[in-house]
Length: 96
View 1 (tube, rainbow, N blue to C red):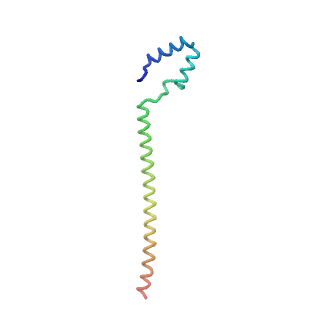
View 2: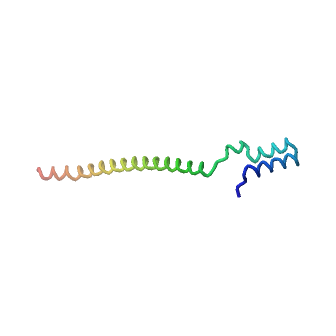
View 3: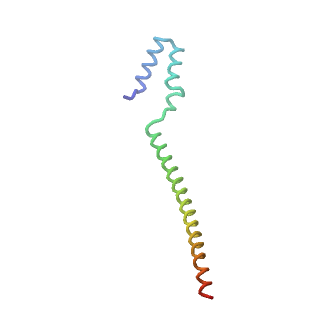
């Protein structure tokens, strides 16, 4: 259940009446250390999720592309080495 500003104000007033102004202000600072303006809303969390998802997607995409390029180069070099080890002796044998 969300508390609206009217209920919050009534609670603060009752705290002031019961505890006094200084303890009530101290208690409210403990509840909202940076003030109610700094609380995250569901929209803030959705926006953060979207930014994080975008960052992770782009980072993963870049990492996978780099890994595939490295793997392809290594495979091509290995295949070229294999072909040379087979082709050179066969060529020498065929020429002699």
